[in-house]
Image (cartoon, rainbow, N blue to C red; front, side, top):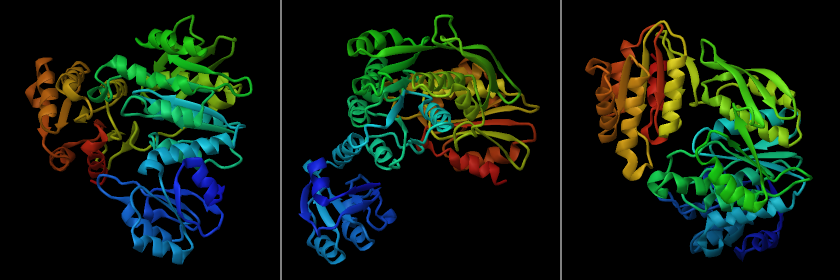
Length: 479
């Protein structure tokens, strides 16, 4: 929530004031006109599917304290705002992303007492963020990124929605292009951060994994010490770009690197990792200062151990209670559509991991499928992955080959050419033709596969969000 005059809002963001009724603005930031409440500031993004500027008058009539345009404001909207006592501004350069970032920076400046922790990476950042928020929240008033609001729009909304009495902000930073994480980090100024890994997500945009590593490492540029905490960056010691990031980014910036993993030299390390019948990890975690604890994680998969170690590293460096944090993380429930194991009426268990996918997370989820005990078949329902550019066919082939190597009993592939690449690779790796099914649409897959699932079957559902495989989950759970 913000509380400021229209003049202060304009000074903080560089926006031009077109109409100022003189009322103080006290409300939230809204980017959807349908969700505008009394006193809110509606920011009108000119999106590809919907132009928020067409809803300025509607937002004013709904009680907005101010509307921020990203184009010339129609006379109708000005008249509606004047009648409703609503301020009207126009974003500098008609850039609403920059408007929000500047406003978030202003809010952050007003709260130097906030300790900010940031999470980025190709895979696992949302799980790490949720673990970090749960651990921090055990002993501090914590405000964290909601869901997947980790973009140039989502990060400012996280900062701007933080309660005044927050002590710690946990911010997730995602990106599509180089330079985006640097802009977000400059706005939230974390004292501590972690990079979960460097994968192939967005390789079609950035061109190489080294460029992806550079983009993720931009978080270092925003690190700033806070009351003796940081600046520091936690990294997996096993990461093939860990040394590159440490030498090229952390050392020149004077940021400490906290390595985590399973080696004796790691500052935070996991020992004796085992997986139970549900694929959940049991381990001993140790820190370099001698602290240790037995931990039983409630989320399935070996990969979440890495996420846990990174979260714990930041909690330790923040000077927070690690025992309380670990206990809170142990009690976490799965996030919707992220390795969420659910029972279908037919008796099959469905591992809903349909929120998003990249090659590395596909492999990690297939590992979960292979590690969990089941009395029936292991079924992998996979859709296509986006933003892989010229590497798409090759990387989809790797996923198909990996599925075959993990010994799935039935591989269900949904999509077109790239689903075909997965199928071809799986068959090449020895999966029998009667163990591979292909469908053009999710609806077809539900109609054919749903009725043949049986008690004891274990079904992984995984794809990029655009593939819409959450429909498959809903269809199976409704039968």
